[in-house]
Image (tube, rainbow, N blue to C red; front, side, top):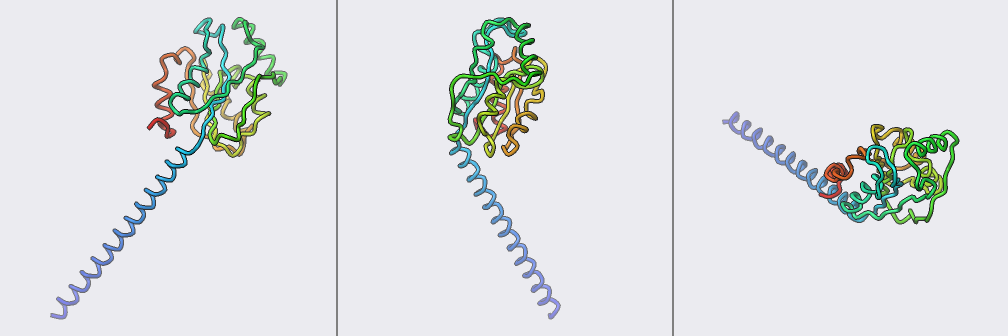
Length: 214
């Protein structure tokens, strides 16, 4: 009889421990759910900007185009995320054929030139900044480095993207991290320039992984 009572006591203790464990699991699940809700709320409340340089005119592979490849990607990003835009505009390259432009871009990079651009933007209004451009000689065009020197994106979320014809991201991400060592970087995106006009789906897929367009 004593043995039976002892076994019943052990069983009751085991049930008690199991119930405590479930309560702990439920509490953890509730905490995780709450944290997830906060993350979504922060995402919804953030304000994004697309900063980009795009070259229209004579381009490799696509010929003479009225809208630059990078601008098309920037427009996709704005459409999907609601981000505002600031286009880095310089007229230095207007009307140039592809080969002379390549030579000029190489010369600018070798000399560390920082061509001026038009307009200004208040970056303090934005929590997230997409930074995009074509890859010229392995990195962003020099006029974009003029922007990097003028504007501080440290402590913001920075998301790089590029258009290219074989260079991928080049050293764009590395150079951005050098310019903004205290920024929070998310996964970058690159796409062939000749693919951008049919590439909205790829942009959507990338942005979805970052939490946009869900």
